[in-house]
Amino acid sequence: MTDFLFNLLFFLIALGILVTFHEWGHFIAARKLGVKVLRFSVGFGKPLWRHVGKDGVEYVVAGIPLGGYVKMLDEREGDVPETVRAQAFNRQALWKRNVIVAAGPMANFILAVVVYFVMYLSGTWVFKPIIDKPLEPSIASAAGLQRNDQIIAVDGNPVSSWNEVVWSLVERLGEEGTIALEVKDWQSNRMRTVELNINDWQVDDRRPDPLGSLGLTQIKSIDAFVYELEPGGAAERAGMRRGDLITQLNQQAISNFNDVRRFMLEVKSAAPIAVTVLRDGRSVNLEVTPKAVEQNWLLGIKVYSYFEYESAGVMGSMKLAFDKTADVIALTGTMFKKLLVGEVSTKSLGGPLSIAEGAGSSARGGWAYFLGFLGIISVNLGLINLLPVPMLDGGHLLFNTIEWIKGKPLSEAAQEYGLRIGMVLVFGLMAIAIFNDIARL
Image (cartoon, rainbow, N blue to C red; front, top):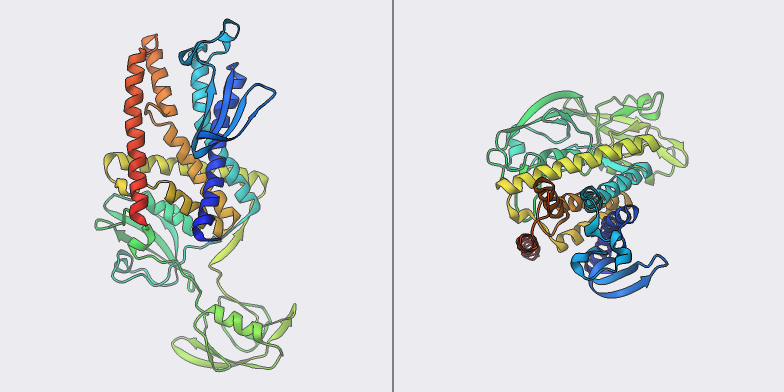
């Protein structure tokens, strides 16, 4: 399967889930509040599949997957028999209409909590924010960051993974001043604080990369430093010490711990191994006799892992899911504000192609990463729909608020004019996003 087809498949899966949940929110709220639903459609245009349920609702999957709708009984859209007028949407109390309208975005927030809960409960591989040698020249190198530095906090906020670092940096996009990083050298545990001067921070709007634009790169392999010794193990008996840098094994050059791991997997006997380590700036030659553990021959040393598997119980996962959803809502709201005031360029907006690429790349990373992507997009969809723009759910809430203030609905002419403005804004934004997608090809 080509990358395009793979991305398209998971784009359709993601969009189908997001749209279905959004419209389900409107649907279930309308049904619970006594409004008659005529059609539940995932997608627009010509139906590819339709089914009329026992409840009289027409369920539809249409050919254009970029959205969906719930059609309710409404006197503004045609004649309604006297016997069912009480079930018409326009006949409902203002609070009921508000609940039905807001239920769609709320369903997206609920979906985010659900997928994050499943993600945390099932467990994920988390990469520690340990940096490789900073790019030259860059803001990171000018600040004095070095290979093997592990980022502990950003602007005073503790971080434990690369994702948390990225999110913390994204919050500062478009700003000036400095970003304070608290880092430690994991070899010595020495802590220090460095400041990144972001006055000249230039991020590629078309392909935003907060880390790369600062000169930060994620470490791909840990140096072969001895982080921990097995008490009484082979390495300790041979005189190896914590902090030794392994440079040779049986005269084979060693550049990182992956080389050590590969060497040990090839060892088939307990014959002594000639080990050369760098200690306090000088080479030390040792002879280590490995031992067999579960059919693998080991030196009895442990490396500092730059990734770890994390999972939580039911209650812990639920708390993490709510916290994550709240963080995504807050960050997305901040980015909307920065986009509105011009601190972030509209070139950073992404359309269907960007979403498809994100869906495909996250799916390649594993089920947990796809769930994380789904949670982010679900929150974005919910917040976008709450914007006070006619044609969106937030626009309907705006009209209802004006009705509450005035004591009567806006005139049909005013609502029609507002919808036209909303269409221009929404389709204009979509055009910008699609144009950005094309420019990135």
